[in-house]
Image (cartoon, rainbow, N blue to C red; front, side, top):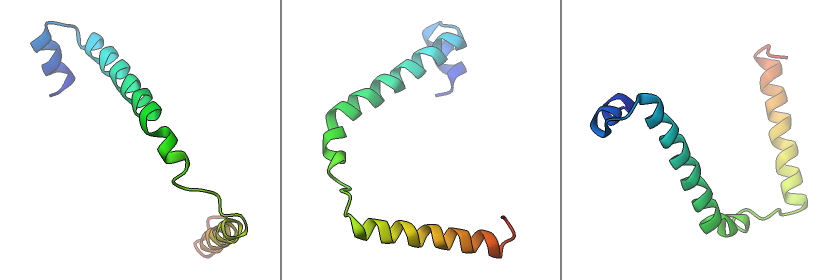
Length: 72
């Protein structure tokens, strides 16, 4: 539903609906981070030298692409 539809249905001002929606999203984000954050922390471990090589290659390709397209 749109903000306007929600406001009308709940007999609230649109600004109040926006504020409550913002707060609800923030609370949901915090709850999800609290619940699954520790799981995600270990999902992408740093792999030392391998990660360094991958990072260097990505940066090299980005630099080459920017140079080739004239975006320096």
